[in-house]
Amino acid sequence: MQALVIVAHGSHLNPGSSEPTFAHADTVRATGAFDEVREAFWKEEPSFREALRTVESEEVYVVPLFVSEGYFTEQVIPRELRLEGWDVEEWNSDGTDAEHVTLDAADVEKTIHYCGPVGTHDSMDDVIVERAKSVTGDADVGEGFGLAVVGHGTERNENSAKAIHYHADRIRESGRFEEVQAVFMDEDPEVDDVSDLFESDDVVVVPLFVADGFHTQEDIPEDMGLTDDYREGYEIPTAVDDTRIWYAGAVGTEPLVADVILERARDAGADVAAAIETVREQTREDAGDTAAAGD
Image 1: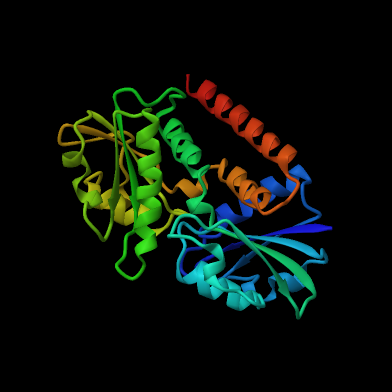
Image 2: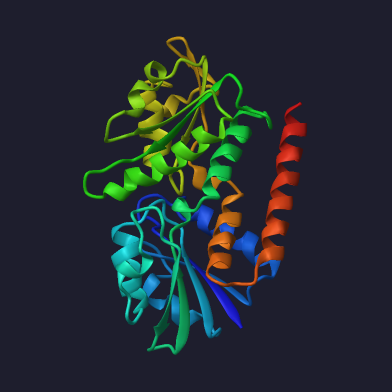
């Protein structure tokens, strides 16, 4: 038997914080790729500490639904799961390269395949682009558009910014958009200046956050000048100076994130190729239905 455990931060303050985790778990569960699929959280129940006791499978794939490598993926999760022999050096990562490590959780007698975070997987490029398609309603979005990938940014964790730059660089190199830039809430270049940072008349703004919450629903829209008060709402797109801002909200709510979770498990040895194709096909069908409804 094999199990998948998706671990995420959760929140005591934002009841919607865990919704994307449950939604992606349901998507994976529906594929039948794993005998068991569980969710676990740092700030909500069920907790990290009890997660491995809730599965019967001997082989467990643990995928962190986090944006970057850092304190939680390197210290908190391995400690709470009681992964014997964990050493962050085993990931051999410069901040965006973590893949997986196989370890024992001796107290529950299980083999744990501990994966790198979802946010740094190469497939997140596709999710960011999918988010741009969703917010513009244009499957071919790119020509004439700029793309801003937004991160929190913090001096306490340099890897937080690395993940944002990593995806911005890769999407820029693809040549799909006229311009691509990484911008931040707490570092330069700041999201407040998006309309000045781009030459394009239209800019899609995609926050690399797992869930919508205070930052994505209140701080960023106000910082960009979409509204003076988030409670009053704003149009999509909204014209700020001479730039039309297409604000997408948290990338973690995009259904295609379920594909990245499966990709992480496949990289660690799980037999999930058919499930990945199923999720991609379902996402394409859902996107087609959305576009048709908007015609």
